[in-house]
Length: 150
Image 1: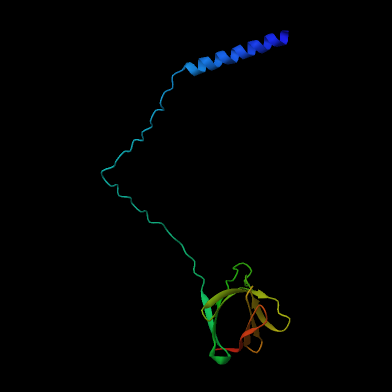
Image 2 (image 1 turned 135 degrees about the vertical axis):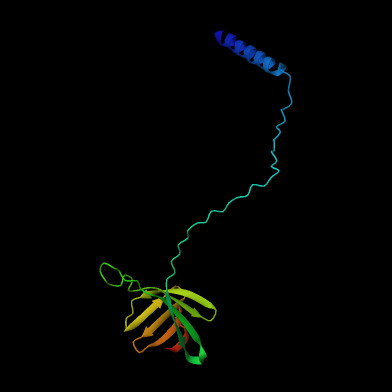
């Protein structure tokens, strides 16, 4: 019995709340107007001169003439000397190699035989001690052989 009384009270309360809420007249939403301020005169903006310091590394480029008149250009950056220890800081630097219309940066790799070897994911460049170089791709195909510096 007390359960039924509680249930009746809950139903009466919910109906009365709906009646109170439902009696309020609906109002249209207020339209929001954006105010735009027009500026008639143009304000000149002064561009401040900034000091831009750019460091250009000096480069040395060597052209190699290979078999079948293929020209390969190898660019090496000049090494800077450490002023405190009087030794070269970057003994093994990367080179930029241009073959045809493609230019790639090759990193130094440890060579099994005497000479310098550079490679990246596509190419391998090997300069022997006799100053003859070979360019090959990653699958071992020789792109340019018997390259001699001009």
